Length: 148
Image (cartoon, rainbow, N blue to C red):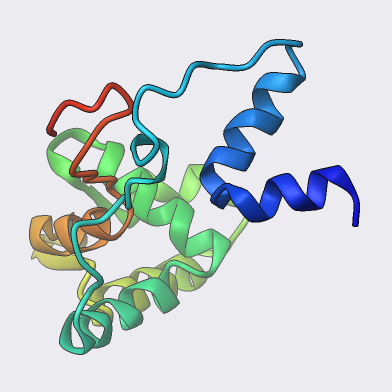
């Protein structure tokens, strides 16, 4: 059995990755706390109900055009935009852009409001918070060992 396999069996995968990355710089980083590098990024897994709630949103933004549309709406002042604001950013027809916005609305990511002849799409803060919480690291300990 090779030396690297024996070493990998004696240490956990986080320590192995830390040593592998640092060996590229020809020095090893000091380990102040053996558990510090392996702290989970989330306090707990999401529940089945939470997963059911975000899956339609994730499916909706799985399309590159819809992901860009959502990003454009979020980056507009007030996190709202009408189709007329979004069309110049795409090589898509107005009906196609409207269809994509409808999918985002039906998934719960956007609200819509008719103002005169235009429909404005507004990002739903609670939907953005739900998506953001999936990808926000909330470790209980930092690398220095301090509580977060």
